Amino acid sequence: MDWSMIGAIGQWFAGFITLAVLVYAVWQDYWKRPKLLISFNNEEDVKSQGNTVGLDPHLGSRWLRVRVQNKPGRKVAKNCRSYLIGVEHVNSGENYNLLPHDVRPLDWMHDKPESFLSRDLLPGVAHWVNIIGAIEQQDYLKVCVYPSFALQIPGVYVLTIQVSAEDANPSVVKIRIYWDGNWESLRGERIS
Image (cartoon, rainbow, N blue to C red; front, side):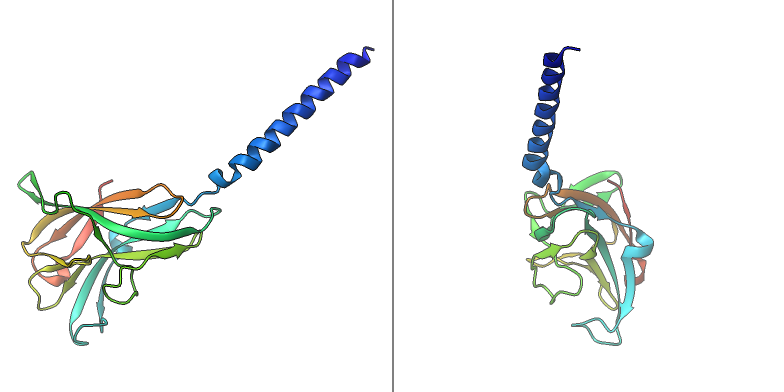
């Protein structure tokens, strides 16, 4: 039995293990970085409600929101913010961009109205971002951005939303909005 060969194999094995531990130690933070997930489901994320803060309690309203979550098992997504980065009016197959070269902050559900604060997202905890509000007795859709913006023509719109946080890659989603002109008709579908 050649002990020098066994010693050489042992050294190579120890070197490989040391290298693997070093790679894990260096890249561990990278693999645990926050990962932002955006989802939308018309049945769960479009809600009709009464007694909305800031409105007459007798008025009904309907809110379209997107769900934002930090992937389970990741570090906290700090200073998470959401932005409206595109609004297109779809008119007989032709899209018209209503916010060219513009980015507007969106507000989180249940924050003070128009506060536009950032949030820290714990892994696995869902948060919602207000996108559109349709309010009874109003003939426009309120887009939940600053500066304020409204959609006044019934029809189909495509909204592009981006969510960003420290140490996380931004996540983008497009939602097609359908509105027939009354507050109860607001609905949407995710298209990307």
